[in-house]
Image 1 (spheres, rainbow, N blue to C red):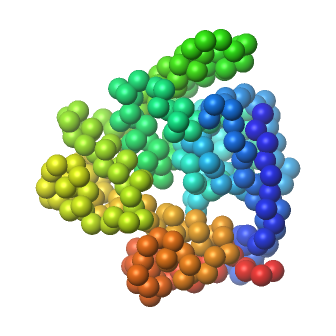
Image 2: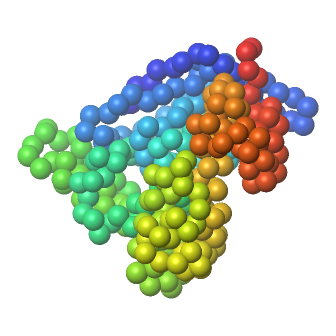
Length: 307
């Protein structure tokens, strides 16, 4: 079972209607503790959140919901919890469950150091699914896909709960590879007919973005690292994701900026410098161009600093 601890230094502000807000003190913002071997899996039967709970992940997370009611918010998107559902949540994303949410299902958490144990043939699946998590946040599963995933999750849970033995981590990593490949096959956006070479280049591009988005923003720089032209990278990105290369880079920056504006009390100036903008004005112009509101206006929807 995972344990949580909570800082208490600012408030979340949730918009209930056009003119009504309520404040959630961040005694309910929790941060997960480190887990042994950077891997865990649990089954929850009727797990209930009596109060709204919000936290930022330090591990990648897969939730396989068998049944439930309520809502889950991931960054600035809110999803209804029902049944036969899959949620993919990348490390660094903020998650909150609405009060009285209840669900039964599996929670699988893994860090990058554990993922390195999985065979390299699954790397593309992990890169595409988790380095671009907002585009693959949730899937509704048909009966066959749900049953297949539940079967593998059950086997992995059984392996996880065994008494420790040599190569146990490698065995669990093999199960994780199978899960990731099955999820990638479920994600129809990954099977649009582009060849395996393009799929590999696209996955490498997403990996580079996740590692360098704060310091490298030009498509040409990424293209150079990948050994292709900027035009080729843009065309490839559009075929693989329906989004251009520049849009993917900017999307990573905007996602991190929104998290900082929503869930920290850091001044806009500090956020701008953390994201490697030369001036706060440059950051504000970039944010408004991509989010259609200024950083200050966006924060006002969610935060009330100092209360």
